[in-house]
Image 1 (cartoon, one colour):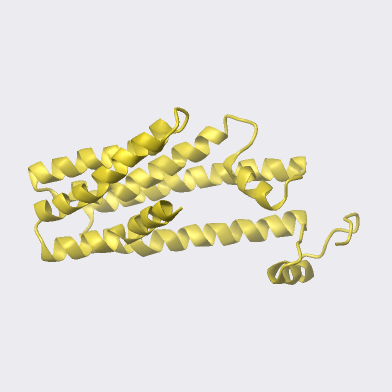
Image 2 (spheres, helix red, strand yellow):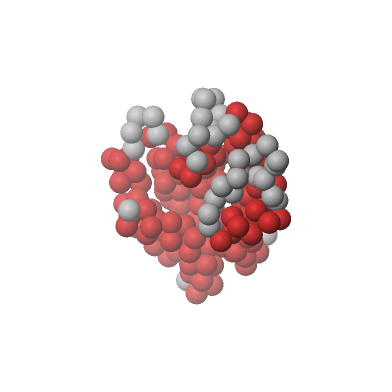
Length: 207
């Protein structure tokens, strides 16, 4: 658990750290630091990944290692800016793979809160999973475009702040749509608020 938290913080802080590094250091110096950080992660990913998840989990760190090595060899900073693209690619593959099965990724999360989902709710979860797949494609493309053609400051602003704001907005929008559509409310404070805004249908049992 601690390792996952550290890895998550590293991904979130990567754009700001790279921008600061490229501002004060040379491209090769930053590439060497990134390489020293990513190689242990790649090794751990290979060891921990199961056969079913190995390609998706390992491809990102190994891809970053390869591109950072290119940055080290060519002194081209653009190759250091690829981690957000890799992260979005892995998330896309992870979510998209579940669409081939009976239980989509969003349904897996939803079942943690409500194990007995109706068929319309399951269909909704599948649609939301598809929306997230589209988001990862667009978000990764935006990060890649900024890495290739825009100033590093723009790349850092988008990948380190704006993209997370878009993710939060998408999450909130989906939550509101789900509450308005299915009117399933729990006992939490936010549920009580939404129960007033979107009262249960007349045919629904009262909590």
